[in-house]
Length: 255
Length: 301
Image (tube, rainbow over all chains, first blue to last red; front, side):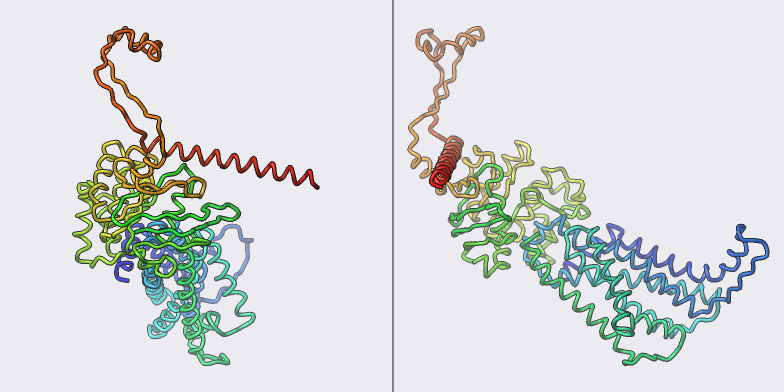
């Protein structure tokens, strides 16, 4: 496990895979409060509006801005995660598959090392972005309750853990990195769009509701206990990580 | 020891291996010969657990590949036809990773990496990124990666294909040393070198084993009576053309002193070509008889 972990850290650093993650999450974190603060000024300076146009925009609240960051994370942030992670297993199998599978590799260690390094970097990047975004929010919009922020941040990290397990599973499933990216994107979109229709308030949909509730400091009104979306998301993550093991065992003799 | 028993393998409708059985004795070096596409790489990939046969059994160092795959992987060092590396690692780092994966303790992995970099002559390039290695250097590094962990069985798929003549000589001289303590099974198209280094050969043609065994016995069994003759003359250059045209009938009559005559018995190269030719003739005959049978069937119908 330590061998693979060290190799994954080395790969993350030498190939600069951490850079786009940190850059995208920082950008998303910082841009949200700045955009919210400057939106009236931007609109008033727009030259193509008819004379006399009046647009009434209520000032953004702290919870709106902070949940806006999570909303951005759930769009551009997911794309960044997919772009960085889609080749982590598929690309490696293509590059050194014959060498790799001819060695007595413990697939569990291999998968866990990949997962944990990717998760650590992604979680740190998103926390950094959220931290800076919160700082700017407190400076530009209004005071932030840090306790609320940390609760929401931890819940987002749970959601991110699920996203990463989807991306790595897709990467283990197919041999082409771009195809893996497409598969991961479809699964994530389906989970985010379709699942709330059939199973509202549960699993990752419930988790995002929970994050929104924490930011707006409203009590949890779901029909199930508040821990249920957290536990089901963690269970889903563990299941997807576990699925990679038989899949890669099969791949060893079929790549 | 390596043993294949009645191994068959299909890729879709294409039968890549047909009832393949052979045996490589322990601490022997055997060459694996065959034309391109004969099934050499398929067998070698199977021996290291990268492919699962549709039928048959494979044993490596007494362990069945069906039931003890991971154990077999620990016992085999494998050099693929096109060695693969992480281009962002240095040669030394790659060997350390390879060593740790086959169970060499972390503290000894660095020493082992340095040792095998020296063995394949890459010590001065230890810190260079593998992505910047030449083809020949990558092949040497691939051999070092196969040797690391000191596996008792070496499976080498065309280990000299990217090497220059000097590198080839060094590789075969290394293999000569290694075969004293390891079982080596290597594929190559360079028959002369195989003949120099190998104790025996396995010849495969279109997925079927056509010959196998120790080299002296095989060559003896073939019953070939033709003898290749090499005659070295010391002649004036002006006589060369005349020699070429009249040699067959007038050599003795023109008074050229014969300085050296080398009588060369049949070698592996001739034997290999003979086996392949026989296999192709058999195949042609089978095709003809099949077509004849079909024609008869049509006539009856």
